[in-house]
Every structure is written in structure tokens, then in C-alpha cells.
Length: 201
Image (tube, rainbow, N blue to C red; front, top):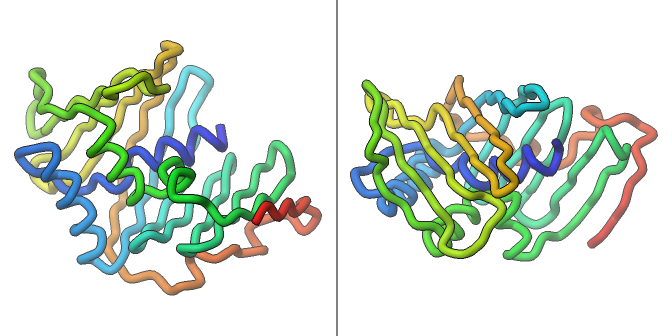
């Protein structure tokens, strides 16, 4: 679940503003985040195995994800990822390719080059729906994004995977506010003192 949470957020959290064309929407999303100095939000991920709740903070190319299943900090250079399942705290210096799987801003560039995007034919009241499909074989079969037309904020994302599993992420409580640098660096108070440190840098 830890890997899933981080990967799914890499695929969607930068998408905060709606434009008439999906490609333009991605660019506006990044601009909206940076214009606010930073953004925080709450999320719920629902699968056939249950649900998980947590929070995310983003600012520029930095981010932090906190949930019972995963804790991850990235300060623009170093990434700390803790898993309660393994009890390990992994420290890495991610490559640009690796960041596509964890960094929401890097994921935007991946979407623009690797996915086909179009406005979905089926729209609902006060909701703008976008359908994304990968140009090449990917773990994601189809991704549906649901935006609130009044606020232009992403409220729901539905991931339909190649293995037929479905992940639904609901986002709420958006707040735009500049975050201190410490937000994106490892906070030892969030991890058990006996966590095994695995430094992979």
C-alpha cells in the first residue's frame, strides 16, 4: 500500500486547475501550485482491500506525504521513505526517472509525453471529467479525473489498472500557503526510534 499511495500521488496531485484543453490544464496546475507558494490537502484512497487516509504538502519540486501506511519527505535533493510494514527508513537521492514515480511535478511531464488526454464524453453536473490512457503499455489502463467546475479543483481520481484493480482517490481541504523548508525534510518524531535506516545514496 505504501508504494501504491506514493505512486498514485505522483500521477495526480499536481492537477489542481481545469483548462478547456487537458494539455493546458497540466501547465495551469503547476502554475496554480507555485502561485500559492505551496499547497496542502487531505486524501482518502479506496480499494477493494479497504481505505487509507492521509495528507500531502507540496511546494515547487518538494513534497511530503503522511499516512499510517507511508511517510515520505523530499527536499529537492534527498528523499526519506518510511514503511511500517518493513520498519525501514530508506534514504535515497532519486534520479529524474525515479522522481516521475514519486514527485507530482515531475509526473506532469510524464503525463504530457506518455498519455493521451481528452475530455470525457460522459460529464456530470458541475463536474469536468478528463480521460487519460497511456500511449504505451503501463500499469495504468485508464485514469479518470473529476474536477469541480466552480472551484477548478481536482476532487476525485479513478485509476483502472491493467490487473483489473481499481483505486479511487478523493481529495479535500485544499489550502494554499507557503511552507517552511522543514516541512519537506525528514522528521524523526514521525518515525519509531528503532526504525532501521537504509541509506541508498
